[in-house]
Length: 172
Image 1 (tube, one colour):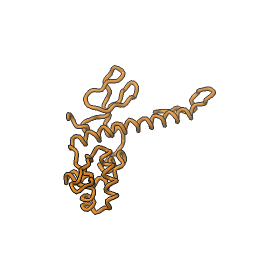
Image 2 (cartoon, one colour):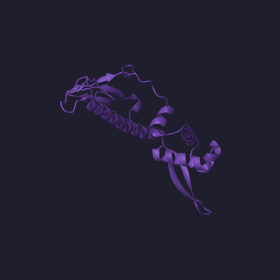
Image 3 (cartoon, one colour):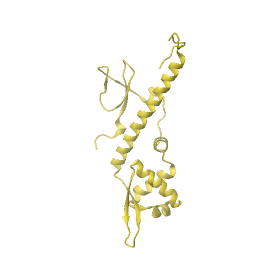
Image 4 (cartoon, one colour):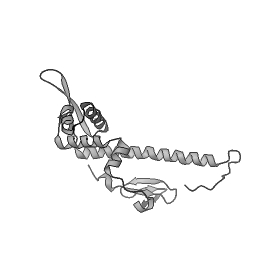
C-alpha cells in the first residue's frame, strides 16, 4: 500500500504561512515549504486511545471489542458478548459503529434452521490503517476549517466596521 502515513511530515510556507501535510517536497508560492518540527508546535504526542476516542468516537470498550475481533477472527454478537462479558446490545451497538468506521466487516449469514445472524470479521490491517488515516485527514481538514473560521470571527470583531481600522494588531 505504499509508505505508511506515519512518515508524513508537517510543512509551512515561508511566504504565505500555508500549512501542508505529506511526504517529500511540498511546494507553495513556487517555493518548497519548510518542515515544521514537533518542538515548533508545542503539542504533546497523542496516544492511540486518545486518537481513537477523540477523532473516531471509539470508546475504550469499543477498542477492546475491536481487538477481540482482530485477534479472534469471525464472530457473532453473542460470541463476542460472552467473551468480553458485556450485554449483547452493548456489543452489537459497538460492532455496528466499528463496521461504520471500516474497522471490521459485517455480513449476514443464513442459518440452516432458519433465520439469520450477523458475523463480524477483522479487516486487513493495512486496509484498516488506510481507512483510519483517510478519515483522520478528513477530520483534520474540518478541524482546520473550524479554526480558520474562529480566526476570521475574532479578526472581524476587532475591526471597527465604520472605519475598517484595526483596533488591535493581530498576529495569526
